[in-house]
Every structure is written in structure tokens, then in C-alpha cells.
Length: 248
Image (cartoon, rainbow, N blue to C red; front, side, top):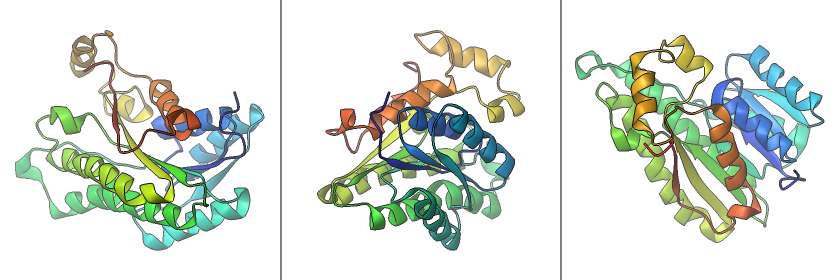
């Protein structure tokens, strides 16, 4: 598979989970991939090693997308090692569920700084250096923007912003041949959902039961959608919110 041959992709928050799976899938499709991490260099380097073991090309690039200076360094390091970025996957994100009574200013800014400002800062940097042939920005949002579960006011708010930004930037950047789309996963089995005790819980059983397909998601369910959106097979698709949620 080489539909992304000659392309350079940057995946933020790619040291584990959905981001890691997307990075590996893009590499398998022929792209050279920058695996961004904020704290887990070891995790990012493990992703790079798995890509290299399959004949792909990748580098680990550190930096916190919530900080403008870090975003500039992430792109400088990526272009220095791999060349100009053609594909940006805004995957970096955090979440914490809490009832309204427990919402704090600190938690609000933590989630919005990473989930929203980080996406904007990375998109700004990518748009400034995409070539004349344009590029593809893929945002990772969430099905919470549709189901808005209790105790998710901050997190659902950040992802609602991501959906709106996706449509806005698709219109703004379209004249420059830049496509902007969002993938909105349902519950996915990751290190994070395992660590949170979600996998194996009644919540997981309920999520699986609510899907016509009778299961929750796996990381490769999301990664394959990202490869499609990054490729020329999706050249007429922009401003779309793709719900990858098993029909929930």
C-alpha cells in the first residue's frame, strides 16, 4: 500500500492509543511520519521502532501543543528531519469527566488549552507551510458532541469547538487546496480507557450494546479512516465530521 508515498505526516499526541495507531497506519500507507509526544518519549520511540521494523520512516518529535513555542519547534524539527508537512493529524487531547459542581478554572483551561488551542496552533503552523498542492488536516474529535453525556461539560465543550473549527477552517483554507475534516470516535479500547477502568466495566457493555455492530472500537478502526482522509481517495471531501462509532 503506497497511496501516501512521498508525503510527510505529523501526528500530535502519537505516543500511544489512537495517535500511535494512526501514525503506524500512515507509515504503512507510505508516508514519512513525525510521532509527536508531550511527556512519553519512550512511547513515541517505541512507535518509531515499530514503523522502522516494517520498513517505514519516522521520527519522534517532542513538544506540548498547548504552547506556541513548542508548536513552532515541533514543525521545525519535523521539516528538518523529514521535509515539509503534507498531512497534519490533530490527535493530542485530554479528558476528565466531572459534575458541574466540581468544575474548576484550572481544569477548564487544561482541556481547552490542549484540545482546542493546541489544535489551532498546529493547524496555523501547518497551513503556513503547506505547499502549492495544499494539504490535509485531520482533527480527532469525539462522539460526545452528539451524545453529550452527563459530567462531560468541559470535554464535550472542547470537542464541540473542534467540530466547529473543522467546518470553519475547511472554508477558510479551501482556496489554498487544504482539506480539513474531523473523525469523531465512539468508545475505543486504548491504554487510557483501560487505565480508567472503562474497559471491562458496565459502561463498556452499554456502549457495545448501543452499537448495531455489537462492540466498541479498536484503534485500527479509527486509523483506517485517517488514512482514507489523508489520501487522494478523499480529495473531494472537506469540512466533514466522520462519526467512527459503530453506528452509535
